[in-house]
Image (tube, rainbow, N blue to C red; front, top):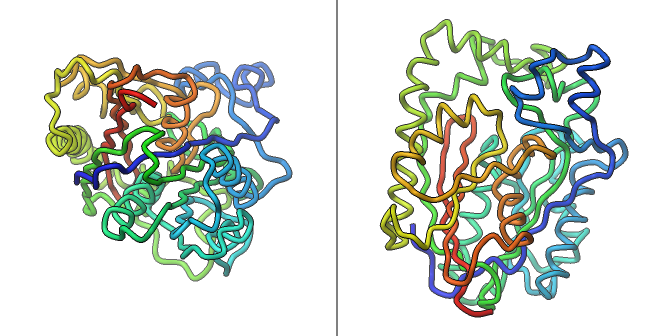
Amino acid sequence: MRFGEGLTIEAAVTWLPEETESAYALVAEGVLDADAPAAAGVVEVPVSTSLAPPEMAVRAGRAALARSGTDPADIAVLLHAWIYHQGHDFWSPAHYVADGVGAWAAEPFGIQQMCHAGAMALHTAAVRLTADRAARAALVTTADRFTGGGFDRWHGDYHVAYGDGATAAVLGRSGRGLRLIAQSVYAAPDMESMYRGDDPFSTAPLAHSRPIDIRRTKKAFLAAGGMDRFAKTGPEAVRAVLLSALDDAGLDPRDARIRCVALPRLGPKTVELMYLPVVGELLSAEPLRLGARTGHLGCGDVLANLADITEQEILAPGEFALLLTGGGGFTWSCLVVQRPESR
């Protein structure tokens, strides 16, 4: 989908707790195998020992609003995305975030789509602003904390380490930020059982295992022949969203103005199997892998990548960036942004 002209990412922010866990220190302590840091593609991950995810989201949201100069009263819609426990069992974290940032006139709601939820929240916000010219701005937040007895950030999944933190992005029409050009989305719901396995439906959280054991459900998916199908579907989906987004943006894959392709903050094996072959075949742009000191931020990878691209001034005026991501279920997307010719 190509979004309306003049839609911009006014600001994108990553908020991380100060405390970290070093992958190599955990190897020295015998907690991790020697090859675990390289398999996850991380040096360390941020760890929140005090703040719950919605509290971190409020901090990220406030920072994004301040950086963009946006009045919270102008936020028409606030979308909060997450993949893991937000601190309460029967509650709306999106409303907490809206209250915390002062967006009292906003319509708050949550987005649930596993690790693609942040990208889907961005897409939903952009669609709203494209369709509703009276809506001045939107705020997207993501936040997760993978601590406690319910989730093992290092051993719960294959080839990935999960980092705590929050991200936020303000969408508006000032023209001062990155231009939000297009985003293509592709879903393969027949892959949903990768994170369900052959477990029966339970009546309460964490009934099947504590902590959550993603490896168990993936083993069941493998035994049922799912991984062979996924190995084919994944790259096909990445190709489809990449080419569709470029077409919507009016760009040739080899356009020299495409400066970089930001990849999900996953381990090298996943990235090299699913994303890099397609990127290398179709594009001459540089692949960006930005998660060595964050790990996988749940559904926050895309917004964190937007924040890094902006803060590091990776794009020259007129250049484009592509941002690829995916999430269990399964859904993939490609986002196209451009730094304006002049600011």
